[in-house]
Amino acid sequence: MTNEELLAAISERFDQNDARWDQNDARWDQNEARWDENWRQLTDYRRQLEENRLLLQSNRRHSDVRFEAVEDQIERLVEAIALVDAKLERFREETNRRFDELRPFS
Image (cartoon, rainbow, N blue to C red):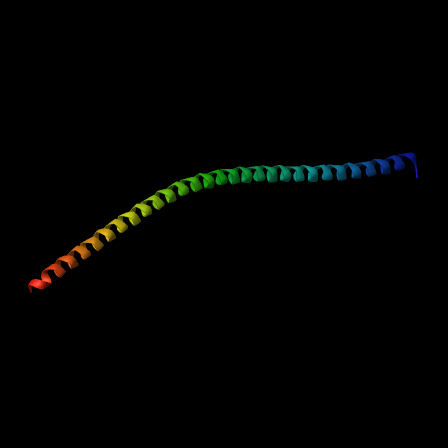
């Protein structure tokens, strides 16, 4: 093998290695682009998750306030029913007493 043939073989081998390095660089670039996109999506998901957490927290507070208001209304309704029930019971007793007073006259 002559020097020119040897140099040509070495040069061809270097060209093959350069082509493989270029392919590997392209793959690394693709992988890096995918990682960047995945990181961007993850960051977006985390942001959305935080927004949803804050929204749920706000809704929870609002719901707690509404439930407290409903509980207050129920307590007032129970008290009103108790008052009406007591008033009705007094009316029954008074009516029965009056009927009992009128019975001797019948």
